[in-house]
Image 1 (cartoon, rainbow, N blue to C red):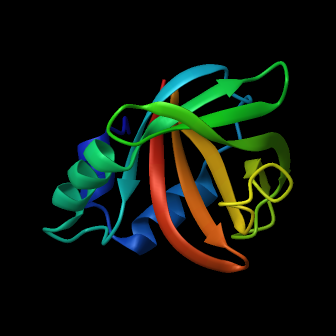
Image 2: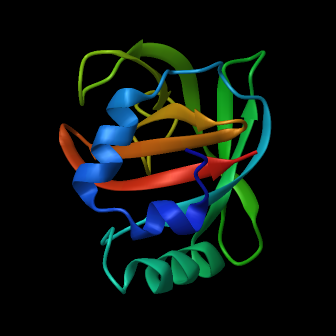
Length: 143
């Protein structure tokens, strides 16, 4: 099945988790990705929340695959800030390999955040966000 942002926003949390578990880590990406926050998945509010977050807070990520780093594009102006280390490791969700976006040593603001992503289609990644060990939200990245 081919996935797009609209499909992911309409999925339940269980369906998103199952898709993540069934997907490979893929290669560490390089370049700019458009991001979509997936909050309240499978509800009528998910798309509205995603649009608000995308407009005012977070637009995506810019990866430097060679350096193993990324910057988030944030604010109304798409400022590149909040750096993370990027590497492969075991997922906290299922123990299988994923790509980790680790803010613990690179950001004061996001030092307690860990993202995990897996490839769900060509240039398309599904992600999980953790605060300490607690899951917060999902997101997707389209390159």
